[in-house]
Image 1 (tube, rainbow, N blue to C red):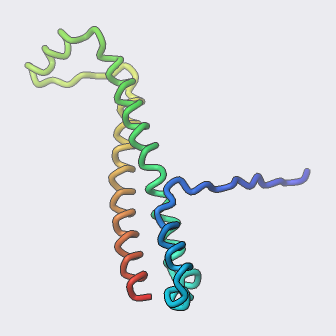
Image 2: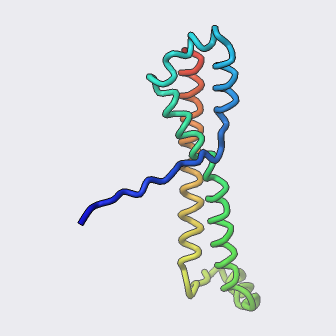
Image 3: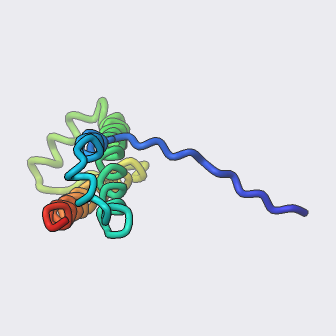
Length: 130
């Protein structure tokens, strides 16, 4: 049996760095200074930033979809929910998966936002030093 590997073409969803690259390549002085782009961390950081910026919209959609699914379970139970709110007791979902997925999506969004910010800060430092 032969093992085959499916290669998937990557499409950058947030090409924020392309205008910057075009401006650098159009200027001969900047092109000379730019020799370290592919040898240093700039290229990897640009890829990480582009990838994160590209999937934030998907994370938001994931959270929205799962909140909507959780809210469907509450439909028609307004009296029960009002009573629970007054008494300080909690509601138990029959299907907890949408709540869990919404929490996971929100958590991933927060951690990836922070990572993106840190990548942008590192990119900025390396870019200016180069």
